[in-house]
Amino acid sequence: MAQKLWDKGKATDAEIEKFTVGRDREMDVYLAKYDVLGSMAHITMLNSIDLIGDDELPVLLTELKKIYALADKGEFVIEEGVEDVHSQVELMLTRALGDLGKKIHSGRSRNDQVLLDMKLYTRDQLKDLAMDVKRLFDILISQSEQYKNILMPGYTHLQIAMPSSFGLWFGAYAESLADDLEVLLAAWKITNRNPLGSAAGYGSSFPLNRQMTTDLLGFDSMDYNVVYAQMGRGKMERTVAFAMASIAGTISKLAFDACMFTSQNFGFLKLPDECTTGSSIMPHKKNPDVFELTRAKCNKIQTLPQQIMMIINNLPSGYFRDLQIIKEIFIPAFEELRDCIKMTCHIMSEVKVKENILDDNKYDFIFSVEEVNRLAKEGMPFRDAYKKVGLDIEAGKFVPNKNIAHTHEGSIGNLCNDRISLLAENTMAGFSFGRVNEAVEKLLQ
View 1 (tube, helix red, strand yellow):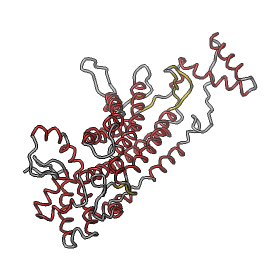
View 2 (cartoon, one colour; view 1 turned 180 degrees about the vertical axis):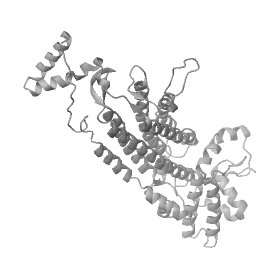
View 3 (cartoon, rainbow, N blue to C red; view 1 turned 135 degrees about the vertical axis):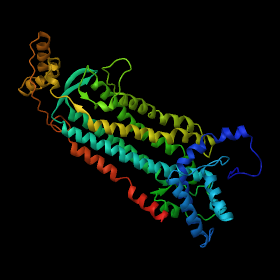
View 4 (cartoon, rainbow, N blue to C red; view 1 turned 45 degrees about the horizontal axis):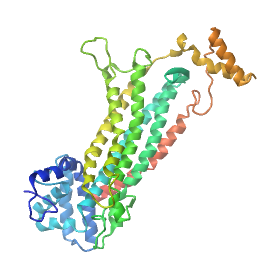
């Protein structure tokens, strides 16, 4: 049985239908429980304005909760011939309740339904993503503290430059994630606004109570202007994609460092054997395939904002079917990024670092700046000290002093990990996870 909310009794060409539906049915399975939540809030509001009766509301809510339970268990199916999740939910209701099931669409369009579904879905994904990022952050801070006194070479232009430490290296990526959480919080704030009630983009002649659905669904506020609510489709996804790309950029760089530092030419890090792969011909190989794939996947995720931008950047106001394609690239990206974070968490918590790296004479010149600074502190003008040490190096007379005494904020001897942790904690506190969870749980009671 074909089910289309817009059906007027005329058949659509089969090839046209296949092309226009695209992967919507596949992607919409991800949105099923959010579509049900939106319908529950919407009909509760319709009851408050007398479009659904007091005797009808509990019947509809009971049936919608059954559908939600199916979706939550992964058992929701969009049947053959049913166009999308909205049609499937309404079909299931009408099968169970007859004409009563047809009442739930009053005051809505598929446009604001899918807007709402995407926002509710994205909101959940952002919550999980933020938790994953914080977990990786905590692991990196812990490793930074554990290895804060173990020195390693710092590089510029891939040439040895100045002394660094594993405390600095792990901590640098932790602080990068703290900034990424700030970007994620901005994406959350744009996501957590209610578009329901904008209908097809121009509102409704029904006296809808949009503040009520905003509260029922735990949104911070609503997208107030109904035209802007529709213009926000694609913009929300692009903003979230930028946040995901920021996280992916941090992890990709970390993965590159890890691949480089585990190679025999460096040998600074050792991955657990169970986290490496072998070669079909070379028996000695222990390859960092996980980090190579992580790097590639994260680089792919960094193209996501541009892909979305190219779909939406030449569209005027109002709804266009172009926007449907965003789901196909946006929804799968969350799982891919979270998989990369999970793998990085696992390996970074188990990785071993090499001690006494800088004892090797090839790193002696890394201490040249320390000598320049020592001479300057004794009164020699910095430029003269720089020249003297340079001439000593050229003449083969430079003798390094490997005692490092860096004390300023953020340096080897003063990592400021406590302050970096506070940055991340304060950002996490800005997410309204508790209020969202409370609203959803109350709606489902």
